[in-house]
Image (cartoon, rainbow, N blue to C red):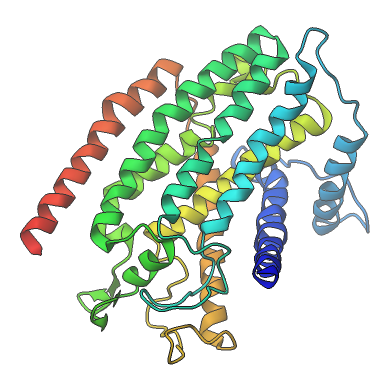
Length: 371
């Protein structure tokens, strides 16, 4: 039992601390540089550490940002609930990390095979439901932080956060129902194997449409992918759906009264949320670690050979797909203007929700006719 716990902690450190936290930290600077590029500006470029060149400025800024945050004074509003005010950033930050417990970042045993998944911390049959259960907790951090601040701007931002996240969670979940129906599982590892063409009853089948198009979720559920992407951007409170922190009318929204590490934890949690959404999207719609045409070398027990080159190429493919979806989200963030709040809610309840339900109904009808 102790070895299982130690192995899980090692996996958590490798993927969360070695990839997620590093990528989220890089995104805090990459976003500013990307926005500068798209707006014909230079962006941050003066924190040199070894000569005056772009790489020196990039590395220097990565060092300067956390140093500045650590040295800034932590401020609590005079009438705030101090304990809740300081606890709230952690309540928003920790769920974003815990969701990685059930996301496979490499090949696991084929469906029905016994054995541990080397690239997964917890192989749960209802892994997707665990992701949504944990994700729903993050709303408490934002709303409690806003309420505890005792600020009108923060409170309005907190109310917007609660309404927006609850509204778009419904659409977010519905857009994955079609994936469950087609691939017949709630287990993330099994869903990836199904996208790779593996069936637990008959083994490997034809994994491609027309002989060359992979049976990934984005091919079998293209509209669900579009709706999922829109809902996930709203769920992470990113532009054009960043109404909870709309600086034009709410100063900074729900974290207006936060400074120093409180602000930094909220911000880093938001960037980790972007990475989590990208990982879930890559798993459900882009085949996860699957590389078309690359067979995974399996043992007699149906487990991938860890020392195989194909196994590690698959891990690299998953990480690449995650980065690709992260960059897509950031490009959308700096391309579209912010919605009005009534437009945001109108889009969610009047358009995305009915379209998502229609997609589920059509998927069920097609499956009924073809099976």
